[in-house]
Image 1 (tube, helix red, strand yellow):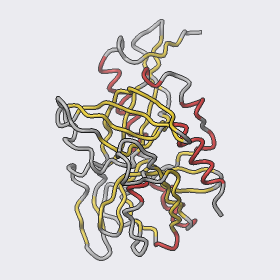
Image 2 (tube, rainbow, N blue to C red; image 1 turned 60 degrees about the horizontal axis):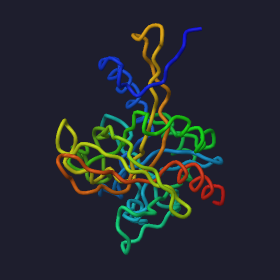
Image 3 (tube, rainbow, N blue to C red; image 1 turned 90 degrees about the vertical axis):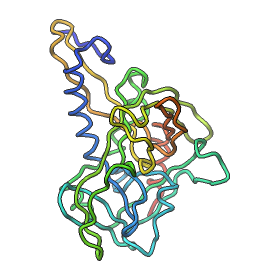
Image 4 (cartoon, rainbow, N blue to C red; image 1 turned 120 degrees about the vertical axis):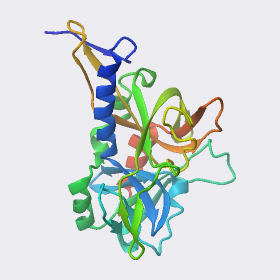
Amino acid sequence: MDEIHYDNAEDTPKELVKEQKDLRTLEMSGFSVPLWSGRRFIGSGTLVSANGNYGILTAHHVSKLWNESEPLCLNIAQFDHIFYVPPPMVQHIVIGEYSENRPGSDGPDLALFRILDPAKIESLKARKMFLNLDVHSVETVTKFPLEAQQCFVVGCPDEIKLGELVSDAPPVWSGQALFSAQVDFRLRSIRGEFDYVEMLTYSGIHGFPATFKGVSGGGIWAFMLRRSAEDPSIVNSLSPELIGVAFYQGPAAEDMRTIYGHGPSSIYIATRAALAQVS
């Protein structure tokens, strides 16, 4: 049997690495959505399911921007469309309460919009995917050291066109404005009931946005490359794992900035526990 090496791309031809990155970032985008409160853009989120429930995982400071008298609107395709969930069909679940009295990088800052309408869930499934949190765990997503994996944060930066507003009432959006930013894993820490990750990325160069405002609530993903020991030209990768939720950007310094977010324990323990308690 051909031996398989897992690696972090240091010795792998760049064109083969790019091929796998393009494939996996497309997969990540299938779970990701920009979010609006009515016609007002509020941030990013990731479609998840657990314990028979379906919803959108995001940052609490993003979910607080939703006006409960307005529909929760999502951009789910690359053509003119409208997709919204009316307020009675959205349950706002706070997992880690954000407070303006704490530094933004400290957290906690985690929430979920539970979707109560089965028809809306089925419509979403036709265009997007829900990540089943029940078939993952902290152990499975950290099987390989996070610093050895290819890591990305997926969201919708304000400065990148959000899609053209085709119609005002109701709002009809054209285009999907997700951006997958590669990040370098730096640190995972545990404070109280939650864990946190810090990632370093470019800012304002190499096609990266100068500010990551709007990416808050977006998923942080990781995957491993696999290379054949006998034939290095054979390169593939494991499916990406959701390892975090972004909630804060540090100041830019020398064209780099730190992205702060919740880590895998906050998703696979705290989020699942919160969903297990809903009615």
